[in-house]
Length: 231
Image 1: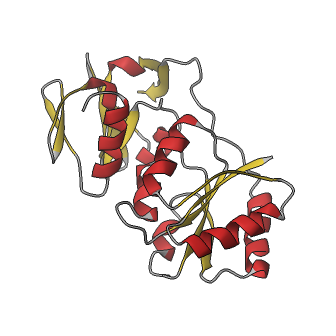
Image 2: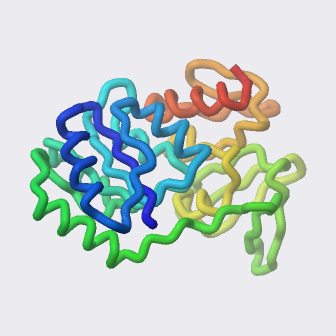
């Protein structure tokens, strides 16, 4: 079964998608909500294979949700606006449906989902280490020792308690290897929220380092810190 979520603040649009999903035998609707933060909290604790995601919503819009997620599921965007189409394809987006969504267009989109062969990213269940190659040699880095990760051109700097590692990788790719305590806080930074010692409106203090928090990620970062009881 494909576990499906619907996130749309328009009740009628949400009901239409619920009816369409009910017609698909392989779909199990696990969440339908008009509250983006409800989905964020749900996805932290439950598996979701596919989301039908509205873009224009109050408090936290669809693109902000995608930018904030460490391991995003497959996504079908549902919106009356087309200006986000280009950016959306950076975030596992399968298709882009313009409202009002017609049944034939819905079916075409979910056929693309089937063609993409949904698989959940491998999570680090039971693993406590990040495996990388540094200077051509395999290295295991304890998650607990990582403070934050910074994008540096075509490379990443991984800052730990003992040293910094420079590797050829992207933030998007490395997020699939990290545990749930790690969160994108800025377009160039991923932070280990377990290591945060101080929180301000614009940065997190991790040890003696100030890691920026941009407006784009602020809501989701603070929500996750609440879950970790750091606020």
